[in-house]
Image (cartoon, rainbow, N blue to C red; front, top):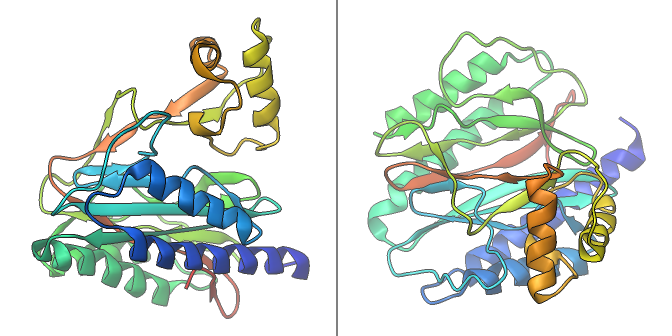
Length: 293
């Protein structure tokens, strides 16, 4: 791997690790989600990175993709299980990490299950390792602690400006063989729960993250302004909190580009019981580097 690229990944990972530690310090009952998200995103930029996606704050049975929208007045409550999913890009090279914070002692073992699963999985990462073996280890670790892995959420590879790509790293045993290659950037991402072992999409209009899927002409000046801003993201996800247009113009512009299929939301992913998540990013080399520790 080119040294400059490696340096960018290592810098992104170091920033992501700092943000994860900051999130752990900040999460408390009564904290507005917008305050947490915007504080962490600001810190990423101050440290020399870009948010690879809006900070995701997924609580309790919400597994992923919740990032507070403009005007979101949600707060963290007593007893919540709070997942903070962090992406940091340096020149487009992305580090991906997450942390789950239990505000109820009864959930601490659930968090321990995914923390242990990600560590056991990372021990297996090497050139030529089979993702099926890594996935089986994740399931074995989670079930061994009395919980269930979420079977339709996976880890994944990362590319420049690309937040999800193949190969996928499943969280359960199966016949999906792929041998890891030198230089691949892999996010190991176990999810665990006491409830059903799969999640479903919720078409909530609140807390959405968006991605550009197709460029098309638009009518309104606000929509054109939004799309110009999004081109600077090179395809990485965004939130309406980052849109420059204000008030009604902003809402109508977002409706126009969404209705025309120019952008697509990442739907909120939910289960039927509290879900924990742990995640690190590793570069597959002769001596693998976990960049988000």
